[in-house]
Amino acid sequence: MARLSSGCELSTESLIRSASAGELHAVAPIWRQGVRIVRCLPTAPALVLGSRQTDDIVDRSALEREGLVMFRRRSGGGAVLVDASHSVWIDIEIGVEDPRYCAEPMSMMAEVGRWWMKALAALNCCPPDIWQFEGAMECDAGGDVICFAGRAHGELMVGESKLVGLSQRRTRDGARVQGQLHFGDPTDVMLAVLAEHRAHVRRPALLPWSSWGIIDSDLLAALTTAAA
Image (tube, rainbow, N blue to C red):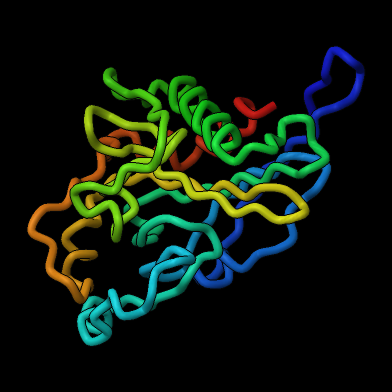
């Protein structure tokens, strides 16, 4: 635990959860008095829709052919593909009673994005042209449907492509900011299961497979240190 200059302690803990994507998204409540950083390991690949997306955007027969199940998360934004063999999914919970909690949602997104940036830098895994997006959500190039094709305040970018996607759910207990980065491009699989054809979709930025080992073993600890 880190200690503030006022004498109070900042409580930060980390853990790993392994379950279906639906169960991982349904976890509640948030720890009100601290920050919890959770590595989420879905037991099977899944397509996860944003809270405001309707089921009719997905071709059910194509979903079955790809061997995917579909779930819905409680946070907003576009659809994501969660696959523990190709991406890293981290939930960061910030309790409403913790001094790191931001009452303004965009400020909370920006702060968590900075924690991600610090953690990647500490692991020497920051691409040279990484930057943090600020401003209103942009949904051109397919971002209205696919999360990584758009951009939102606080997310990390490489050039014009998203490296770390973030979505936020807020309750009376605090905020849960879900983050993901990719080593393998999920775009083709996602386009295959969408009911509406998309001629042009912005693809995500990828970390090289050579950095998988250090991200897999050390990112959780690096994020815990960055948030402390």
